[in-house]
Image (tube, rainbow, N blue to C red):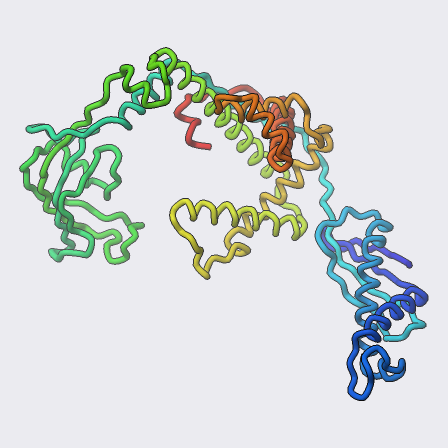
Length: 439
């Protein structure tokens, strides 16, 4: 077998493979035997068809199967001989196939290789490392949020619509004096500061009490979802039915027990809450630092060609994530118009480039294998959410698939730490509420 390699545009290479006639003859014989056993021709018994008759009827198919077999047998060896780091399956084009056993078989294979990048200094990234500390005030604030979640709404006679109150209203909307679809409701509830309405709607209800009837003037946003209302002026007749205020539960033993604190101790509750919040904060801080680092790396290296196989893999990953999100919102089947290759192509190319960058950095930093310290840190972080941490860790180590995910996360965490150690030029302090929930 002879192999020649020619570099083409970008990351493509052209391999020309010449298979000698002796190998063609052997492959032909194997293919011939297969056809001889299974071919059916009227007037002949199966398996007893004369050679010349069989070749007269099936020669082209016998040769085609032989050539396919030769490609399968030689393409891997040809790639190895060319010393190329090929990604995906080659595109094969037959250049010389004369359907003769005594002639060479020649084919070309267009392959894509993993890009080799010139690594750039991490120091040029000049990032600010995001840091955060969990304070007592953060814990107290979280307790207040939990109290509000458990709070009960009570109608208050004489109360005005204000921030953090709930108003039950009737409304009737008109544009150019004409009622429009969706502009009428009865006993519609608005929690001031939470319920999203068109601009100016809620603001003009503030200060009113139950029994008040009045008309407000508003303007629909230019990007409003209803085409016939975009940018239109409108008026709403409003009737306030009731105003409610939220009554929060007392911070006592009964409240604490709602969150699984068996002894009902406030101190135990705060300690448990702090532990959970710290875990969330650590994770959110890491995610934010990783995100800004990866964005900076993509910008630093800019555009370059990546293998189609890498892009296809990213399209598949992004599509699966999207499908899972849609299922969470109750969509069981995506519409026929959903075309992942079109929808995610640009993002997939960027993520494929990032993958190439990070893999090369991993090799440079000698982080291709999981560091036991980082693996232990990942296991500790995961198990900290459970009562029996040791049992969780043992189960994770036993499950090959889950443990592989842990090891991959450990490699990533080590790479991120090592890059940030050189890429960061100072720190940026952020509060708990700025980080958690914004990963």
